[in-house]
Image (cartoon, rainbow, N blue to C red; front, side, top):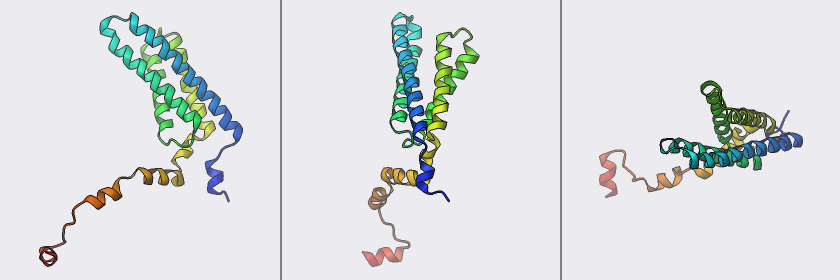
Length: 163
């Protein structure tokens, strides 16, 4: 029989491989961030807004990769966001931009690196019940909200007695 500790951990070599792959994906996103910042300066005014959007997307993705590399099984949901972003960008570049060049190579590589890291690091383990319960309980506003809510008597007779 496996214990909760055994379920939530992975082999050290898998963690190391996942860290390395995530750092590479973050580096690719940082390089794309730098390239996009240069493209903003050269873009005509009507294309600056999409370029700025792309710039911040690359910066956020780089930050997500760094957070996941630091502690891969602590961020439930962040893995899925990183996967959705990287796979979404890769699919859009493959289908909508046939001449994407290095952008396509970077997007597909990042998607493969994040997917491999998710499996290697056991990113899906961040959703384990013992991990999720403590996180949700610490973020819950329910006790303080319930304390501040007015008490309404069940019927009018209770209101008259308490007055």
